[in-house]
Length: 163
Image 1 (cartoon, rainbow, N blue to C red):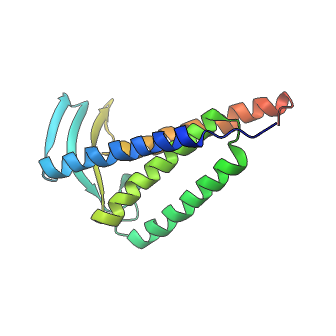
Image 2: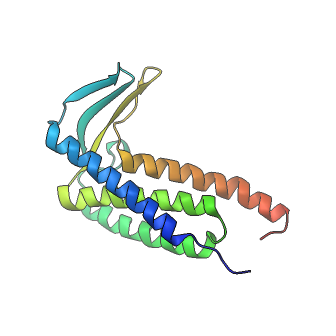
């Protein structure tokens, strides 16, 4: 059976999310000062201009060379995993594409701005969630899709002898 990859649709989707991420960040940078906040849904959802000089939740502040190296390693690993494991698995290809797009989006910020522009500010049941962006959303959703695929669909295929 020929391995089926959906490279062109995945590349188009990845490019769409990267452009969406960069466009939204550009709008925030050009129209808001750091710390400015616009309520969208009361205290639940706000657009807040924020800069992150680290990783998730502000970890590893000002470690840009580390982020450059890690991002390149992650991108190479994602491509390798896509080629080796994702053939005939649309959901896995989608998850990997989202992770790839998210990594590229934040990499562009680090490379050209020296920080990551965050702006989606949510409060969920009295928990003030860390401010994030479109790339962070892609990364998170992609990881959940990939975990689901690896934990449930791969196990199911092994049980049915399809692998």
